[in-house]
Length: 214
Image (tube, rainbow, N blue to C red; front, side):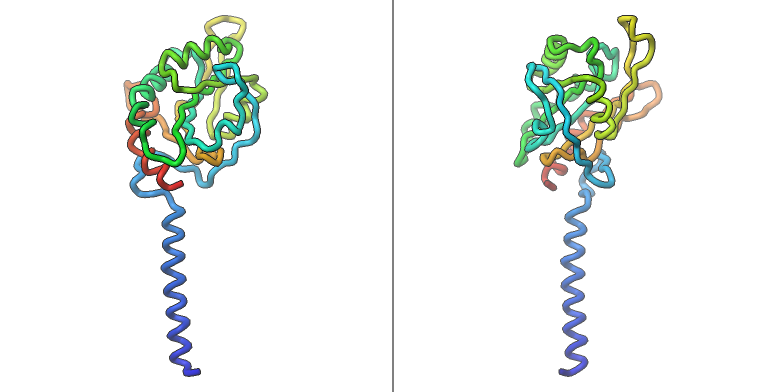
């Protein structure tokens, strides 16, 4: 076979392979249209867990499958970040829940204060902001590893024997994909003199593009 002909075939195959490879890489990378969401380097599989939902039913890893779940970690006695974040998510919920997707979008409030946040209180709290929002809690032995798994943190502060102890916790809103993998987070906006919370309008802006990639 003519050497130039062979070289030409090899060059053509390399070109096609390069085009296909470039398209594959581009399709696997976060879209440039996503402006605020911060992807984790790799999706994180969520380990098995068992909590109790605000309706009294079990809440497990299976409840995160086949849906896009925005998770916010907090507690009902939180004086500022929690109610502000929940209210802002409720404000955009009508548009957020209407985003076209193969899987529904959910909001989960994960209480890390099981001592005070019993199911009745948790149900009243989340229902005050939006009856369609979910809430769950459980023992710290389950909550601690789960919250770390999500890439977040919380810590109990002060004397827990007193009724007004506080809980330090992340203010980010993380996103779990329909495969029950946490893929990244919306971080709070840090501005002098303002409460650092995740901006619900930014969540609303990015979610259509994020869900379209799955």
